[in-house]
Image (tube, rainbow, N blue to C red; front, side):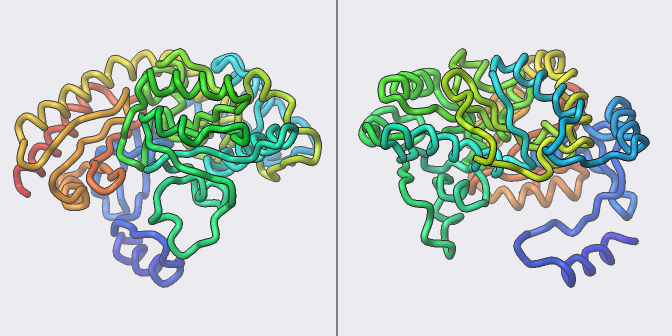
Length: 393
């Protein structure tokens, strides 16, 4: 079915909660996607930081086929399944955590983290959650409440009570809100939807100290910036600052829905049977793919660290070449942003015409989150298209 027919049927069938581009993806190989009309695109979106291994990875194929051949795609959490158990053990080993809760998305992982914080806090009268302006933590009610962007709250009030917002990378603004009622601080070590903004080491270190002083939990939301994307298996490892709870999703399930909340230290043991659940959490198929991704994460992370510097250098060169259109390049590893003076959507459309998929973050930032397997040659091709697009706008 051609692109235009798929798009037409989609418009007739979907709720109108997405602003979708008028192409339908048919197939993929490596980091190249092909639409229904046969046009190819170099993919620097990766399903919004999901497809870490690109498309057509042979190990993912084998793992998924093995599950299909077993005849068991789902068992529920009434029973164990070896794929989920091994994925949890791999996560704990890589992150240094003690326990894992599996769910289906980043929003669900953050919901679990918030419930853990509230339950732990209930022992001593703590319930307040501190979040940050320009943050993004998901679309469910708890997750959207701790998302510090008014545009996501509009029309859905009242929000969850007991949530306050500080200024990102401003420790004094956190100190002004912190008190004996604070149950947790939730923060992205690298803000994604807010505009690709890395936390400073001083800021995260200060949050760790404040939580220790007040007996609050520190939650790192690495739904987008985790899983090797910043040059380490997990973003917090770039800073050497350990959270109490770590939330993950996106790349974890290798393209299938999967999220996780990891507990460290005194955050372990908070949940007891009946406190929280997810019917599809630790799904057999998603867990099998997670095993593959996790097995490759250490090596991939090392490569992303090097190639991320290369990408950042190329983006910085674009800023120098187009000072009338670009302000700054920032980010870590393969989570980079180009802050623009012109609308990102204009650049995205022009890049798409030329065979490159990129997306935006915030109001002014062009976001680059390619599969972790992208090469320097792929980066050169992508940058050339962005360069040409900026020149034409």
